[in-house]
Image 1 (spheres, one colour):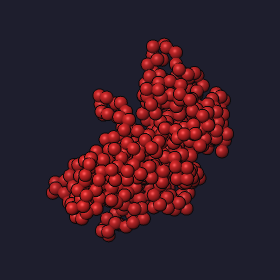
Image 2: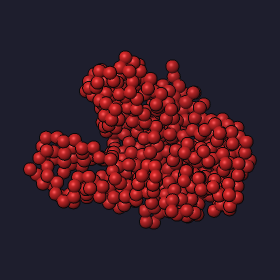
Image 3: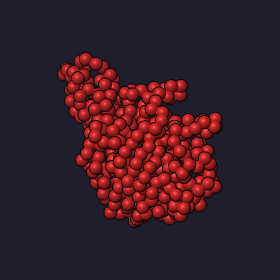
Image 4: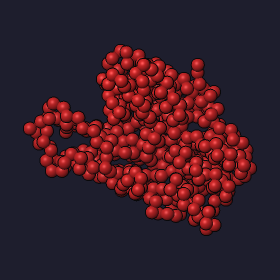
Length: 281
Length: 182
């Protein structure tokens, strides 16, 4: 067993909270730059120019690129040979979030109760934590802060298996069209297929973590991702929903086996400020 | 790029066309849904508002806390649909400009046409860029709302586009229709 003290987790998490808010990942930055080369709408181009300038400014001046610094969503890969000493993992992630959001002057955006006490928790917690047990003695933490605009326009459906690819494509395109400018396009579309009712949205969110420009390992899904991206961009929604060719930078799919009677489909939209940061302990 | 002064004159409001890119300079007030709700309650009770609504422009924003030495943190627009239930009332009471992101409800557009109000879209997610255009920020009311409190801001050359104009022309409809393929 390898022992990791929770203090190390807290300080590492505080650091990645700030890095994620200030620095747009290089793959997203590159995809936006490429979009500037292909966008034909003058207004769309002007907006893409603002977005890349904003990313540069945020990184240089260490200002959050977006005021919605989001729900802190953690994907944790916990080695089965790791023993955490001190605080528990959930507490350490919550404490790191509080420290990072406080030190970085990030916005606390969580209310204590969804219905009865919509009062700011002032900790940006509790965070959303997904833990996967993996072999080995490492602890890898990825933070993907998620803003409300694009999250609110995400959707889930239990489709009939016979609707097939066309049915899935219709649902994806309709979700993107309905989201319009609210999701802050150009977006990244995370598509979770299969699993079950709670698994599909998790897969959709996980799909958003894949590097832009990477190709799905299954050629059938790689082709479907390209087809969906073309369909999404043919809607004309464009940057900020005001018209153009660049509605999405990518469509990423995560698929999983599912029940014979089901075709769970979840579409998690991510705004162009597709923030994430990782640390390995 | 048209340079526009805030507060908007009635003439500017009626001359701006959907699709116009503008740089906004002058005074605006911030408000999100919680503040809108309170404004509407005061209007219903006939009570005075904490700021002059007649001719005002509201920016739908909840900034990050200001870092030391800066007037404001990151400050991009939030989604405007959450204000749709309240905006027609505010427009009927003199609100002349709104800045946010995303399409508005038919009821909001009807009120804009009836009273002469413009809806500007600022670039969602460009919070650092927009913050640079905000020269000062001062709390006006409802500190308990935190980031959602009403603030008076002086802005200079804040980039935006006229998304819906006084005649009801709507770039969220015409823009995608013009660029749709197949």
